[in-house]
Length: 157
Length: 443
Image (cartoon, rainbow over the protein chains, first blue to last red):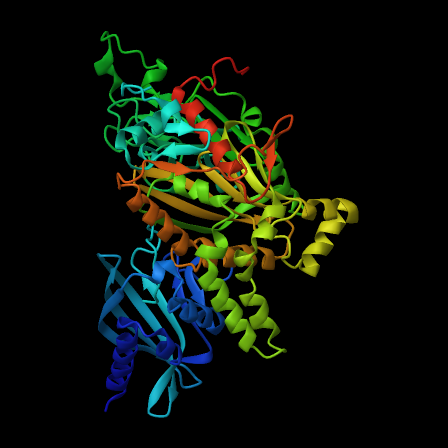
């Protein structure tokens, strides 16, 4: 299997977990210091001194995944399902520590509260080789409309 | 004033209940836009957004009227209708930017000074002997009826009759003082960008929810329990994870805690909960920040500043601020069942960067569309919006604490779990809607 195939397989498997969504298993794809970042503006350089839509380390993922399945979380009472379609997968750079910076374009249709919405983003994954698969050191979700007013979003894209 | 026939506002808003039409009637919404948003002082922006002459910031003052805030060449701040005096085209379309030299209309090239006056008309000789008078202000960009600012926060009103900004704010202005005094240099500036959150419900829900202290332990119990459960799994030495997760549990504070924080209401619908204490009172003070504060104000005054601790302050109808967190939320109505909430964060001048980072963490986790608190609030507003469609009940009640509100000189105070905030804002709602709220008020 080529390197690109193994990268693509990993991205497809990740997306399959988010499609359900199964946040408990999805979280296990991250390294202990891994994080998920959805910036609030194009080309945002700083997650700490500028607002983001999401900037979750493992602490916030732990709270979010518990809240997601909590029986008294009213915004989670509604069925939510997603469909990720991934294309334009490419290796941007191989870092000195062996991790791979991977770009992809992702279109996600989300069904929530009887409404189908479309999100489109350019994703940047930093993948750390782990046996015959990878762990995610960081996932950056560059929405094509990060500055637009957003509706409630209760899952990761 | 619009030509919509008047409604019986005494019927719609009664001392302990209001009618469901306030949330679902599109005509009533249009009337609110002209009589509340068309008369009250509306928050426009902050002077730190436009430091240099020509710097501008645009917004709508109500659901559709575009305005532009600009720094004039003499350093003053102008708020103008964002409309060309010629054929009516909107002049600037970016959210913010810099006008070089003069506003330049993209249609026929008319140009306007930063104060809105007409500077130049291309090929003007065609107007000779036509009766056209280029000095008539109607051909310029019209300024809003009144513009003023307090500690950097710029407000404007479409009403000639509105009282002076400070008189309109009344005692609630203390909250602007407290927000700015929390900066070692006594000033704040907009920092770290804005997020916009679309709400598919009536704009009044969020103002009612700000100081509805009977909801957090119900609506936010899931995220509080999720956070507490996670914290309980942490080893003793996981200090970093613990402090990060601890931003959430205050939302599950008890009825008693909220009762003790108290609610205060003012003229024109402003209100806040807290004062002596609030759910933000137990945030730890960063040593480096504390040192900067003591160096600026001395120990005693610093303690006084920390001690004035409000949770949410509402400047009815467009602005709510969190002094202890240093963020604000700005309400931008769109339709009877739709509005946008903007969350803005502020830097305390002279404070370490970590303070801004804490503010942004809060704005992100609590107030954004992908936060863990805001979406549960919006979900219950939407359920109310849906429930109000039902003819099974016409009324929404607010009896809690009725008869125990205490009228003081310039304010009304009551227990923190009372509906005093509802009575305060709907008294103002009715006064605005009846149209004569500013008649007889000294300018």
